[in-house]
Length: 131
Image (cartoon, rainbow, N blue to C red; front, side, top):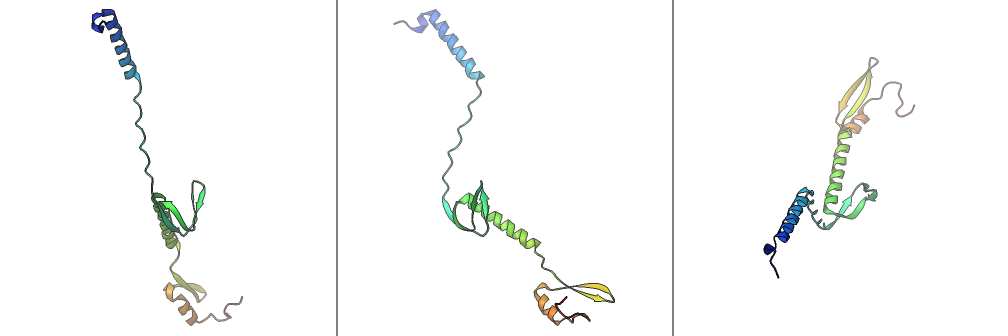
């Protein structure tokens, strides 16, 4: 058997093929890296106070089994909703009365509103809760 180096024509063809292979490889776009294999998240029991929707699937209220990331996200949503609800709730109380035909607004502590209101005198001509 002859060596490739001994046959000059065969060596030239091999060199041409190697050069063509190198050109094709340089022209090809690089292959994208393989995506990482997703890790299995463990399921945790979560008690939800509101109804949520994930990809069209309704979850809650009550205790449900969710992955840790979904549980964190839904609990965060519930916390934000409760904070917003608390912010929008008015914690102020006012008693309106008239002096010389002009309405007067007086702010009172919200916790003591009912007590203060029962001690207030009703305007003349008013019978209480009737219209």
